[in-house]
Image (cartoon, rainbow, N blue to C red):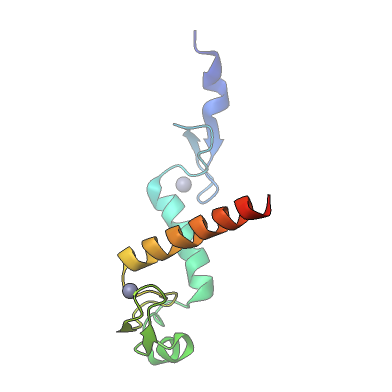
Length: 109
Ligand SMILES: [Zn+2]
Ligand SMILES: [Zn+2]
């Protein structure tokens, strides 16, 4: 009755176990396996144990005073890729940038 079922057997890319996919796109048998892969990828950028160590702080200039491009207030950089003082500013700034882009596009056309 269930013809799709045979397509839903997969082999976990992390541990190699057979598992039943809940979605066609599933690649891992469990959340842990998916998480491991992700952690490994993340680790390749920042070696384990070095997160927020002096080396990393220096490399990513954590603790440095930055100016938020959105509200122009200064803030302390706490995350490696932080550019805005908070999530709201980041959201609004990217939203405005996208809108500007869309407007420019319309102007050209
Ligand atoms: Zn697995
Ligand atoms: Zn801000």
